[in-house]
Length: 123
Image 1 (cartoon, rainbow, N blue to C red):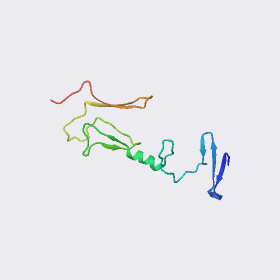
Image 2 (tube, one colour):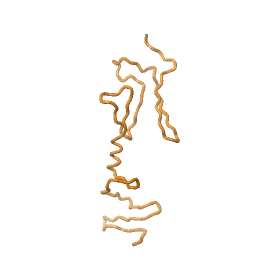
Image 3 (cartoon, rainbow, N blue to C red):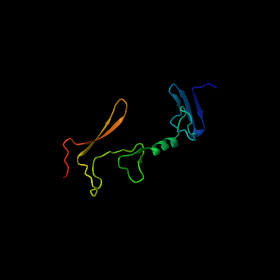
Image 4 (cartoon, rainbow, N blue to C red):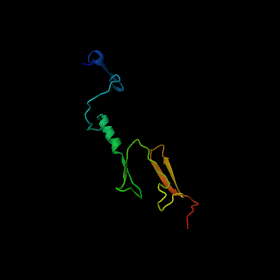
């Protein structure tokens, strides 16, 4: 059978499938019960995408919390700041600055932590 369009279902449960130059149009209906993709050209399902988002990526620093690096989930903002989190600590970050820059061509993001040129220290 060769046809550019097919109607599947009956009554209120019909879907019109249309083959276009841009791909298959399912009339705005969602496609359900999709198996996990296994090949590079397979469609992925929501469960696979959620897994990637929730897996995130590891973030470490010179000083990590107990347990080591933390996991940062995709879609959440990652802040890198130069400020004292706890006034009882034996450090002061008033001489530090942070700067974030992103290359418009490559998308590479760089976070720079610097010491102020005219830093002041307690004696």
